[in-house]
Length: 416
Ligand code: COA
Image (cartoon, rainbow, N blue to C red; front, side, top):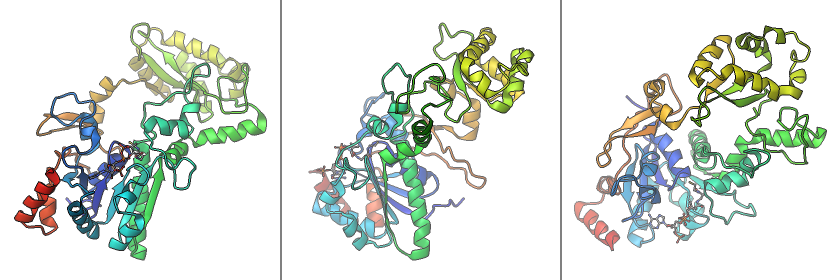
């Protein structure tokens, strides 16, 4: 079956997570993604946190499926020559090297544009071009701090906190993928390539935009009524950490269920959405709260919202997180169990939808990965194994017109 990105050739000059997450997504949708890696070592994640000796680490396999691997020393003249050939016939080059690395290699935007004016050059950096920190190398947690996530995550009496979600890495990769697809559509109209740049700081901030909303509300009125600090606590002049409060204005919290004393994940997230108040009271067996002036409106509930949560926890005390959700869903109450990675890995619905996929791998045996979170009516992305280091070197070089002898010579030079 043909795929939407069939025929789009991508030079994947990426490593670690942000860049690879982007190109993996495009590969699932049909792009021919050729990962260019340093001979001998390749992407650093091949070796990071290995669980099986001599097999590519899961960190690598879970971010590089559906790609080809070409080993090439692009600092050597022979490697540069191959890369130039590849550039002339590719649609996109994606990179996430440290600041200036591509320029130092001799492949500035100007040079790339000269080699192939139709090619889209897509980059991830920690900070945007011209930013006063644009010389910094950046990893995930650095970006979460720089993008406003850390200062607004966690509890008010604890330090700034990092999210387990890859807001700086994979999220930036997703932003870059949107940029690349936009530039490809733009190229159809203009015939020209362009530079697409996404910074990790900007991508984190984009996901934290409701906190910038809150900063402006705080500046204007001096308090934030949906935060746990309201109405009893103090507000300073910056958005505080709100613990597990809901960010959209509807109060919510993580509440204990049966077994929480021994199971650290025996919890549900419970949201008190305004329109769901009557069903919530019915579900909890508190019909008298529906019209009680102390409970009837969101404003009336807020001063004693934690007492309400405590009452809900009493109701939850003899129910597991799954039993609780099964009852609450019948009342249309927005809630979910706090799921562990083990529960997610074994969730039959996620297996059926292709969100959790088991992938066969020639060295590791099979492993689990997260498949495409985007579902289409006319495309079912199939996840294939990540390539071994240099697995497709001969194939790619032959497709560029190199003879068997030239390929042999090139490999000899690279090995030195
Ligand atoms: N052949 C020869 N040299 C190669 C090569 C190849 N195939 N591929 C990469 N290199 C070289 C580069 O030219 C560069 O050399 P130079 O610094 O001498 O010019 C070097 O390898 C890579 O440098 P860099 O990307 O800075 O790696 P690092 O390990 O020092 O830093 C990061 C890693 C992730 C911190 C850095 O790449 C970075 O800040 N990237 C941008 C933001 C980002 O994506 N962060 C990670 C999110 S997961």
